[in-house]
Each structure stands twice: as C-alpha cells, then as structure tokens.
Length: 309
Ligand SMILES: Nc1ncnc2c1ncn2[C@@H]1O[C@H](COP(=O)(O)OP(=O)(O)O)[C@@H](O)[C@H]1O
Ligand SMILES: CC(=O)N[C@@H](CCC(=O)OP(=O)(O)O)C(=O)O
Image 1 (spheres, rainbow, N blue to C red):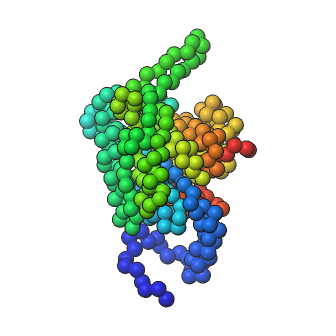
Image 2: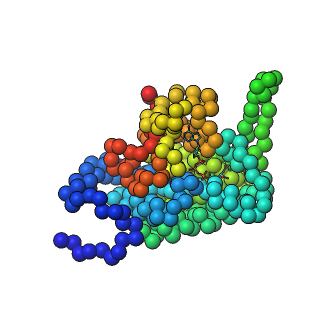
Image 3: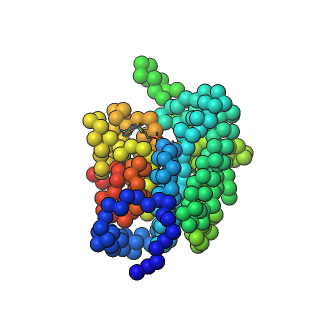
C-alpha cells in the first residue's frame, strides 16, 4: 500500500468505493494514450474562477494534464473582476455584443487586473498544486499581435450600416508561438492574459474567448475548453444543448437565443473548429473537475460545437 499523502487541500467528499476509484483511474488510460503530446487550450472565464475551492481543483487538474504528457495552455478572462475595479474607480463601462467598450483609462485598468492580480493568482494556484506555471500577457514575446476591432451594425429602419467604435478593443492578427514552443519542451505551464500588442506598441483589450481561440488555432490544439458559469449553451426553453452544429449555432445567434457573453464564446468555437481544432467545448466550470471529465470521460459537461450536425 502506498504511504498516505499529507492533508489534501482539494479533496472532495469520499463518495466512491475503492473498486470504483480504481475503475475511474483505469478508464482514463485510453484517453491518456490518445491525447499524450496534444495541446489543450483551456479558457478560464472570470465567472468560473469565483469560488476559491473550485479554483484550487481547477489548478490541480491542469497540473495533472501536464503530468500525464499533455500540454495545457491556460488563457484566462476576468470580466467580473475588471468590472469591480472599474466600479471602485468610478469608471463607467458598457458592452456591445459581449465586448467591453474600452477607452484609454479603461484599458489601463483592464491590463492591471488581467495581467496583474488575476494572472498571478492562477499562476500561484497552479504552482501550489505542484505545477510550474509561468504567467504571460499577449505582450510578452509578441505573443498576441492585435489591431483595433471594427464592428458595424445595420440600422433596422434605414438598413444603413454604421461603424461602432469600441475604443481599444483588439482582434488578434497573429499569434507568435515561439515562446509557447519553448514551454512545450519543458514542464512549464503557460498562463496567458488576453492583452494584445498593436503595431505601434499600443495596448489592446481582447475578449478572452477570442484570444483563447486564436491561440488554440495557432497551436493546432486538439481541444479548446471554455470554462464558464452556465451548464453550456441553452436553447429557448433553457435546456442544455449538448451537441451544437455550426449551422444551428449561427441561427441561435441570429434569433437572439445566444446573446451577450455567450456570443464571443460561440463565435470562437465556430472559428476554431473551422481552423481544425477537433473539439471546442463550452464547459460548466461550476462542476468540480470539469476539465478532467471533459478530457478523460465520454460524458463531458457542456456543449460541444462541431462542424457537422
Ligand atoms: N443561450 C445561452 N446559453 C447560455 N448562456 C447564455 C446564453 N445567452 C447568453 N448567455 C449568457 O452568457 C454568459 C456567459 O458569458 P460570460 O458572462 O462572458 O462568461 P465568462 O466570464 O465565463 O466568459 C452566461 O452567464 C449567460 O448569462
Ligand atoms: C473586449 C472585452 O470585452 N474584453 C474582456 C476581457 C476579459 C474577459 O474576456 O473576461 P471573461 O472571459 O471573464 O468574460 C473585458 O474587458 O471584460
């Protein structure tokens, strides 16, 4: 019998018998073989990281993926945390299609919160769980080169198209995988804040879903997991859609069933699947070990978006 380990800070209630535990471990083996050496991009949303106990479980799952030979890359958000800091500083903030309109004062706060406190909290959790995490923003190693995002809307009455100015909201133009390739060869787990760098050195606020998608596509990840605070994509009757075709996703966005923060998520899943990522999944980050369930079991916990219905 192996010697007991020190007190486990993330242990869950013991609801499995020993034979059941052994079976769970054994059933993970084929998935470990299948995905060894693959890159798994995990988008860790600001809403999913609210509970400290779940955050520790998440960190431990990421370490486990690296330990069994996969290459997890964490790209994090922090929308609610940015919102709270903006409130404290009495800076008003509005959203268009799930994107924060970002003026010069706001982009400073966004960078401070994302690349500062949130990034370091995740790095610390992963390192406390026995991993070796290094935090980066899209500025480090020119990781995320970005330009100003332009959006237009059509006036429903006149049908005239109008440009919307979102300020310093960026869209990724290129992802430079050089630094991340070095990490692949090592035990380092990258933790990335979605800040972009413009041609003239300007700072861009990039939606974390979009940043995660661009990184997943560039790294040819096998999986993109998007952890959030809902069960997945819900239909008009608030029922979970487990399998969502690209065609239906577009219809649900057009008719307003998918709205707000879910729009960049679904748009990103579509873009990454079209770019060759095998599975893009919107995952319920409130479920303990959601990452392990998604990678190591056939069940998963959320909405899988794929090219064919
Ligand atoms: N059809 C839908 N199904 C599920 N969630 C939806 C849907 N449409 C809009 N949403 C909203 O999208 C939110 C998730 O996006 P967001 O708040 O940006 O999360 P995160 O911080 O994890 O990126 C949900 O909490 C929900 O309010
Ligand atoms: C342009 C834009 O909207 N950027 C986001 C960046 C953080 C983010 O995306 O965080 P979540 O994943 O937690 O929503 C913002 O300012 O809130």
